[in-house]
Every structure is written in structure tokens, then in C-alpha cells.
Length: 546
Image (cartoon, rainbow, N blue to C red; front, side):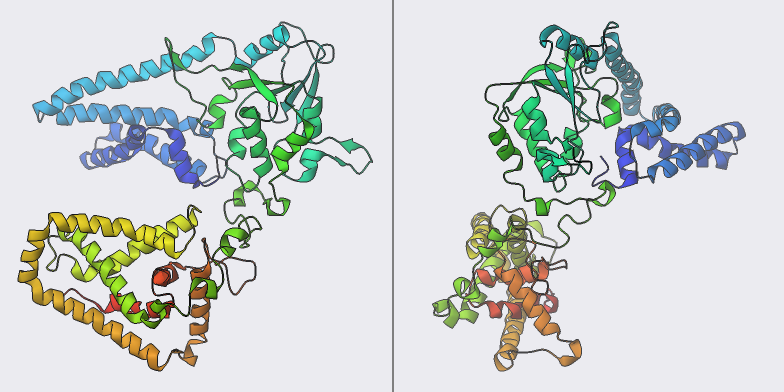
């Protein structure tokens, strides 16, 4: 699908295997070689093919519509380039070393054999009836006359006209559903049109239906890529497929490429590759478990219609909520509590804030150094001066990732949960490297103490500056400090990411904020985390002493 793909890269994925793609690039190199050798006839042939591929792929690759059939005109040239690559490899490499000769002796027949195997497997599709024809024959044989069968407006309805017999009107009643319509209440519950007539919704259609037919994956696989636009439609397919909607799967028809009894499922391929000549067809039958109220609850009960993002598909991946936090996510943000809830003013960590914060930094830094000691043997200090920065970054990133994926709230408990693996791995690494660490200490004691002195010095300098002037900023920076303070507090109080925007009520921060996440390590300790702000300058000032 187009969503989330760059046009050129999507075309590359459609073309297929990397060997085929290396063909045109190799062809360009060969054209250059032929030019240098002035081999006019071969040069003309290579340049014509290359210019055609480059022009056509560049033209179609930049278009919005992504379908592999548009690339068919260059497939022949790509095959020629790939074959040329194999021949030249044989001519050049086989003459040089026996090893290459043995490899290429097998490569050429294997490529040819694989090509014929896939061609044979794919051709099996056309040796049997079309999957929709098979489904139509099944309907005529198993579905009682007078039954009502739904179909999807963008797909072929069942049953088809088979053997010259048209079953519609005389034997079956058809209902055309519109799953591609925008997700809104009238799509599911119906509404009155301007002429006063009532237009049924999907729930009304399911009430009347005896069977539901889906004759390809065209719609259910494409809407699954747009959860912000089709939340209720996705729930419809989910509960239809798992049986909770009250319909059960009674027939399934596929026509996959196959070699003997080995099938090669290709439903995940690009739509045009499967939906026309060998789609997967599903037929569901209504059971006694179907209930209108339950169906309505399953499909729409948890959908907030105000959050459904309606837009053309080519801009659907830009911003799903227009920078607004939706009602469904606010509870996870409110879980962060108030400032007083998160930071106890009477806690001992508030009284000993600088000392405890320094101990936390040292602990994380030592754990990371124990790991870096064996990973960075070429550095004079084995990464000691770098360890505190990296240790803090690892913990902050892990906590940010958990909060962004909504796997865990951004709290002190989560930060400690992220820090514990680092501390444990550091302790294990230090245990097994203890003798070498002792030897390194005796050899590089001066460098280690110098790095530590630089860190502690800048830490104390920042502490003193904040001590004597807590409101440390300059009017020339256009109130940057109040802006920064608000963003920092928003990150600190948000239990999920992205954090709420303190300057945009009801919105979330659309700005680079990870630096505030790293300084929000104050959630670990101490409870009053203004001290954590003074650690921001020290990584830039610290250099590994020689």
C-alpha cells in the first residue's frame, strides 16, 4: 500500500529480489566499461536498455499510485541485465580462481532452475478454475435459494453467472456493503437521505444477510493500514473473522502458486498481483449467535467518532490527531498525578538531593563502564569519561520507548526497571573482569581521577549557580528559561509520550523533547529534580584525559 512508503522505495519493493535490482546498476558499470573500450555495438545496446530503465523507473517511481503492473515495461530489460551479470561474472571470476569457478558452475544452472520452478508454480494458477468461479459453484450447490448474500462494493459479488445461468433476482438477493466509506455513525446505523428515503447502514445489512461473501483481501488488508481512519471497519473484520460477530466461516477458496502439494501463499503481495486472477475468497454464514445489539457494541462500542481521522489517503500518514491528545489517551497521562503527588516535599531525598543524585549518576556510570571496559579496549580510559553519559542515555531511552509504546507509564518505578538490567549486567561484567579492572586502575589511576574531578567540578559549579540564582536565565534569550521549564515539567509529569503541551491546551508537544526526557531522570531520585538540570552541561565539558 501507499501509506508509509516513499514512492521510489515502494517501487523497488514491488520489483522484487535484490539480484534483479543489481542488474541495472551492473549494466551501468558495463556500459562505462564498453565506452572506455569503444565497443560500439555492445555499447549502443547497453545504453539503450539503461536509458530506458532509468527514464521509465524514474518517471513511474515518482508517481503516487503504486502498482507493479506499471513496471512491466522494464522487466525485460532487468532480466537482460541480470543475465548479463551472471555471464560477466563467469567470464571474469571463473578465469581467476578455482573457487569462483566451482561457485559459478552451480550459480548459472541454479538461477535458471529457480526461474523455471517459479514459472511452473505460478502457471498452476491457470490450470484450475478461478477461485471466484469455484466459490460461485459452491454457492449454487450449498446456499438455499432465496438467501441474501452481502458483497463489497469494490469487489465482485457472489454468485457469478456460471454455466449461462444468472442466479440474481431469481435465486438470491444481493446486498452491496460500502466498507470504504468513511467511518461515521451513519455508515453502521444508516441515515435518511435528502430525498427522505432511508439508507441502510452495515448493521442493518447484517440483520438481513444470511451469508457474507468477501471475494478478495482488497479491502480488509488495505483498511488495516489506516487504523486512524477505519477503526470500526477494522473491528468489523476482526470480529467477523474470529466468529464473535455471529457469522462462521463455511467456505474458503484459494488458488496459490504450487509445486506438487507445496503451496506458496502470496496474499501479502501487492493487490494487483492477486485480486484479479487468484484472490482468496471467504464465505461466512449467519448463526444463531448473531444479535444486532451485540454486533453494534462490538463494531462501534469503543469507537470515539470525534477521533476518527478523515482525510485523503495521500496525507493520512502526516498527523492522525492534528496535534491533539484524544479522550481515550488522557487517563494514561493523568496517571502521572500532580507535582505534589510525584515529588514528596518532606522526603529525605529532598533534603539530600544533590548527594543522592550524584550517587545515582555514579552508580549508572560505573555499571556502564564495566560494560564498556571490554567493548572499547582501544580508548585510553576504556570509555570511563563516556560511561556516565551513555548510562544515563540508555536508561532514559528505554523508559522513553516504554512510555511511547504505552507498555509502561513513565514513572520512577519504570526508570528503576530500566536501570536494573544495566546495573545487573554491569555487576556481572565487573565480576568476570575484576582482575583486569584492578590492573587498569593501577595503570590509569590518574586519568580516571582526572575525569572524575572534571565531572564533579562541573556538577558543583552548576549546583552553586542554581543555589545562588535559581532563576538563572537572561532576558536576551526571549524568555527561553520559562519556556524550557514548562516543557521540562510537562515531560516530567507525563506518564506517556509524546508529552502534553503546556502551551497548547489539550495538545501534545510537537517538538524535539528527548533532551527533557534525559533530564527527567530526576524521577529516579531525588524527588525534587531541579538538581537533575545541572547535569546537562557536564557531558559537553568532559573530555577523556590522555
